[in-house]
Length: 298
Image (cartoon, rainbow, N blue to C red; front, side, top):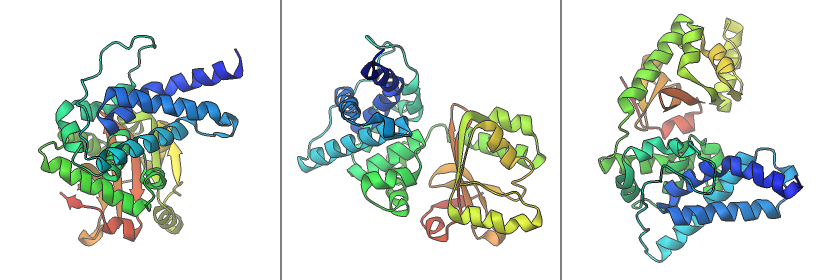
């Protein structure tokens, strides 16, 4: 196998995910396929050996291609074709289940695409990448050319528009149940239960303010906190026996948790749940970021 064949093989491992992202961005299967093909062409012209995270690189490329399409469409005031739901077969390619990554969107199908079409290109990109695919705002920000805080506001505005269109997440009750179970298992130190609730590839991300707070608390016996951890074992170890004062809350309309002594939110835990398991936890303690969150404490 030569270098091009090897690179093509690596690309095919990500094709399903890229197509799902592009389809939710553009609302058109044909345009999504074009965006994915453009990503391959750019990869083929690049020095792939210098790319540390191929999946992240490809997602960024596809997102930028989609953003250009959305902006061009907006300048022409053009409505996108309404995409049919994806076929259960994928001719000419191995079957993939990555379009299940868009399970939240598929639950409301074409209706969600109609609402997404009312968003600005940047709002749509921020909402789709973060809410449907758990991409952190720090990675979305360079794509839309804004700060992470401003990107978070884009997604928050988009989320309110989606809810206003009667398309609030139909799985919110289930997500809340998962969050409540996770907090209970954390408080009780039920390590095996935590593992059951976490996706094997779960990622934990913490902003610098959260890391600094944990470091300052270490003198009182609290464990240190890394900026990023990946894997159920590592994340479960971080939370086992903790979260004693965390409370369930809605954060920008999604189930999460907060530490709010005296009713003042000091840190927020954005928790992304897919298929009944937690796939991402973002710990936010930066006051400027907390200020732009829509938090409703139970």
